[in-house]
Image (tube, rainbow, N blue to C red; front, top):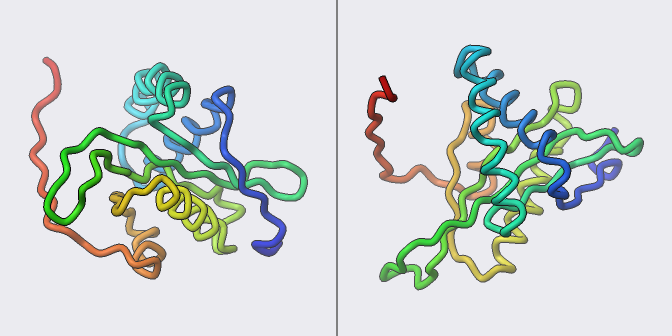
Length: 160
């Protein structure tokens, strides 16, 4: 299979189970979370995803092979954000859930998905996009021009 054998299209709201499968699989493959934690994540994320797909704050694309089988996907979350001196936009784009099924990896599918997502973001008039890279995806993102930033994070303990 070549990248030409792949079709990329925007996901329908009815395909949220596929998106959540990819999100769960992405974290599983990175060794993040127990099976119970991943199941809880999917359960909590499901109503959010349905709302976000419906209100347009989240868009997702699926890559399909010639038989219509889903090979991967990726999406973008649009968030309200205050303008800054270098970026007058009041919305921020964050790429999430980029995932390729194991049997389809190393065939350029993630790259095709990313190029589709980046083109869409540019069409929206946004001037920047963020993402969190896995070790496996970092090389692709760097080749596409992404650079490390000065982002910092503080985590709080969960509910007791």
